[in-house]
Image 1 (cartoon, protein in one colour):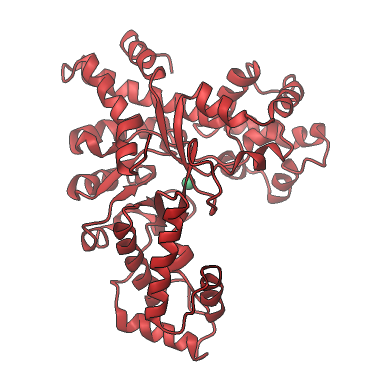
Image 2 (image 1 turned 60 degrees about the vertical axis):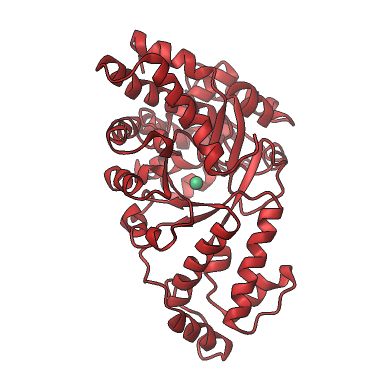
Length: 411
Ligand SMILES: [Zn+2]
């Protein structure tokens, strides 16, 4: 964006802030440095959705990310679709990364080869430190890759609730129990397993558990028991994806999270049939667990008003803008402006890039988050509703203090 003078002053202040990056899927650094990277690394992940939407077929897409194929061949597949997606919010962090880290002003026919060479040359140990700490000023990034082998300083993990809440077969139950050396014969054995498993995660540095906002039934122990027993007796080989055992175990996990003082992160909105992941599905669940802290992700896009009202009405729900800035800057900005009317400012979290392999794009996403927040707060200053120093204090809360407190981070 072209900032006006007030926005520019705020942006200058925001660039000095330390950041808690409240959601990524970054693997440990050796996973990244152990892979070949090139220009198309900047166009994996979310931009792949836009490439597909623009008409790029599945086969071309998989060729694009096959580093064994010549770069030139892959560029010819890619170039027409780049023109279709380049103005979208998903694509912008790739262009910001090319410019800021590799000195390449545009990604095009002339630059894709030198950009790829520079990216590979920089793909060395320390790349996370250089990008996340030195460039982004990220103190800690919360990350989710279904693993806990992180340094717990720069990267701190969350683990998936469904690991324990969604068993569908008797073999699956035994597989889940095996690493914890637990015997599971009864539903109560399985509930004991949940408690042991979550405590183990916590001892490994996990600070939260991630779930998805799905439609579900009210938890019913008798129905859950009947599902469990039908698996144990072999009357049923595999439960359907949604089932009463899952509904029951999900809500048991929410209590275990509270017992362990872990935050429950909730994916809401976006992807495919986003209606099946809408924030509103949390409305009956949240008040059943007043001790549990919920961190509602992605502004619930596109249902940002539903998410805002959930954050307003329930003391134990926080609202996290992770991923939102790169979904649509305009939607994120207008929703945040409405949320300022609605939601206490201690409930808001500004940023999470939500990236895995292209760690460079975390920086682009952060630039966009700063822009969105500067735009909204500058509007409030211009309206005479707050001073510039109050706006800067709010940004510090949203980028750092609120996520640190919500996740009990020791930084
Ligand atoms: Zn995510």
